[in-house]
Length: 307
Image (tube, rainbow, N blue to C red; front, top):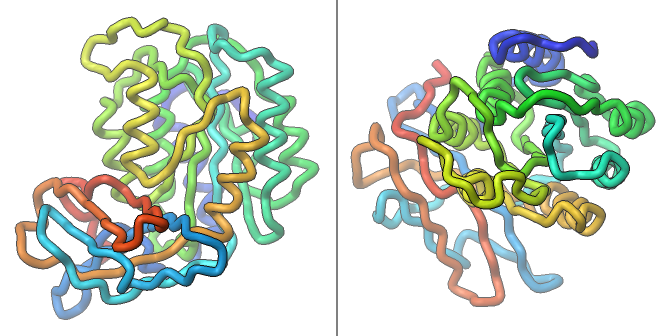
């Protein structure tokens, strides 16, 4: 399926159709679900970096939600495969040489594990599914050369479409979901606001990694939008991901692959001590300075109920 889609709504539909075949069993992976008894359950992705051989448990850190210490019900490493959307800004003015862009994309693809699957999406004013969700490495490697360059980037619309395509699935079975974004963070004229895109990503527990291309705006202010570098920083920090220089694509791909395979944990707790309908800041504090933990920076204003 390689066709230009004229609106974010159409890519949402196409992505939903594609992803439906991959997400088909119940999952507790959403950011908050109501149990039959009415008790709220919150699930967080936590990326853990610790010294070699150091086992990290829930006793090694404290979790604060809206400034209130929370009791952690479970904390476990996830060794399953990931579902990844490789999103590429393919606009004409992106400051990336085509050969280097293709090399960086191939480096990311080459680090996939056997049970991982990836979709490649290019975007400018609209979005193109360059390669459907697959684990076929030759197809994904070939997709790296198919990203054409034209137009201007509507980044926020593309992010919302990808997040919503996952959210629309009735029963999600994949808990490890990530976006690898190749961009400078510049948005041309999306109808979607930046905060909407970020909150949709946070709500669905999607971790965003970014390969940061040099800023084409040279630090210029954008009306009602964060500057491009700030947008990338907020997307990655806000989702528990990381940001890397574009010219270090091979090194970045290895770090991302390790996070997805070796460092990804699932944390479950029941939010208590505050009103859960408001946006709340999250803070995870390790007891050992040799341990680094990342999770999303906040819960969106409300949960999307799975019922």
